[in-house]
Length: 342
Ligand code: T6T
Image (cartoon, rainbow, N blue to C red; front, top):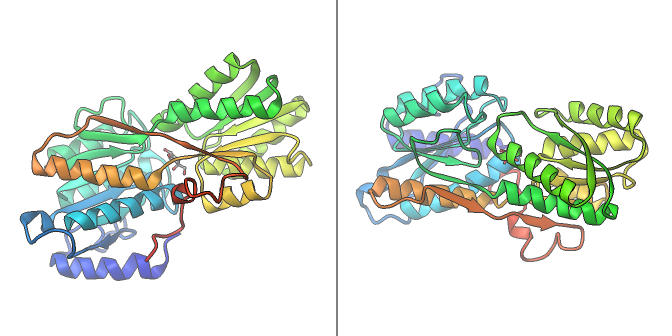
């Protein structure tokens, strides 16, 4: 979660610097009051570029994946002299994200980085952003029709799902029952992870019993695990496509005394997920390079604003993390953080 210092002080400074309360996150409107803004005078050489305002609309609040992506965006934005305003919907749902997008559209930032919470339902509000004059870069998730986007920067989610299935097959010895606990249907990233896992798991000889959706509720994920175990005490593995699902899977297995006996592979690398990996409750994590996605997102926004060529689609590879490599120099930089380093 964000601390008060990070959230409010830079926001106030940026609002004063912007000389306007109309900047998203500077006003008192409840839909934008969770925003934080950082401004840097370094990097840009006094050109018009220095005044560009970027807003990053995350998928949900307090989610360390988006916090880490925001850190990468801020680091890159500094180099261009851009400001970044961070907006977090309360829930990972179109109904929570849409009012924020509408409010951001009204404030007309130069560019918006956004992670759509639904590949279809977020089309109209995001199209409106572009029609209001903001350059749009889709980060993390994307839309079925990304026609308004200068670029889409995401993880290679299908590659990550396949990687998870390969690891699972190795962990359970090439056969046995596994399940997938997913987020919500219609989310581009997690849909791709789940599908690729199931396709590859079947090829590897595993039996995929079911894919079920727990939203962002660890409690729901825990109850999916418990009810699956009731009918399938020989369950061998769980693929959790998000941190929320992983947390619930750990709770569900703990309740049945099955931690370690049933293997868990999680997606992402939040501090809690890493702790569960270190404790041996989870056997592997498929980590995203959230910082890198933020950096690339800003680079694409900068190109769009400068009128130079953008790359329509960028896919960033995942990194497989185990207890054995979690402290290595390649893995450490991809682990998620609760707040950006000072
Ligand atoms: O896994 C991330 C993100 O990539 C996905 O699109 C939605 O869920 C998360 O935010 C969970 O941290």
